Every structure is written in structure tokens, then in C-alpha cells.
Length: 135
Image (tube, rainbow, N blue to C red):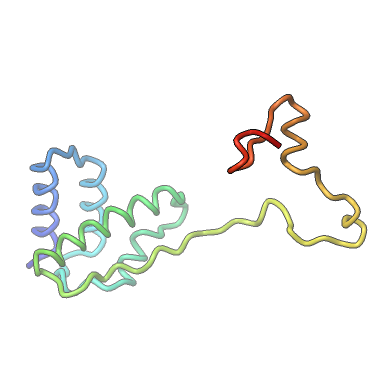
């Protein structure tokens, strides 16, 4: 079965379930144009990755495209149109750590205050599980 007709069936299926499915339809239509007239079983993970990871695409958009395509290929597998999903795993982009867990010799004497002392400083009490507020 062709990719375009399977996408149309999937969109209709979701709309019959009561979903609006507008943004998802746009993503799937763009994916269909991206892969061209390739049969469903001819789609490879490289083609999906190329579509999902375009230059300048935000992390949120990549995650949404991945979620929509995962649902589509799951639909195709459950309808016996594919033997297995060609979806690659989602590689999350990780930024630099906002703090370092390593201590140097000069910073070892500067031990941060415990969370409970910081909370008491602002007038809050800390409840330790199992103590019922009695310290």
C-alpha cells in the first residue's frame, strides 16, 4: 500500500476518534512530500531522520514530529501494512551542565547549607517523612 493512502487512512481514523488532528496532518503531509512516491515498506530510518532533523528545527518540533511519526508507524504495524516500525530512536540534544558536581581543593571548604536550614531561614518548617513534623 502506498504511503500517501496509508497517511490518509490514519488521519481519517484519528478524526473518526474525535481528534482534530490538524497539526499532525500537516506534519504527515510534509513527510509524505519528503519521501515522495515510496511504498510504505520502502521507508528507511535514514529518511525519517532526515525529515525530523532539518536545519534550524527546535527541540520541541523534533519531538512533535517524532511523536506523530511514531503513532503513524504504530498504526501501520497494527494494520499489518508493515512488519516492524522503521522509526529510529529519538536522540535528545543535551546542553552543557548548569553546574559542576566536581569539587576542587579550594571549594571543598565551602559546603552549601542544607536545604532544611535554608527553608528555616525563610520561616518554613521541614517535615521529614515518618516524623509527622516533630524533629
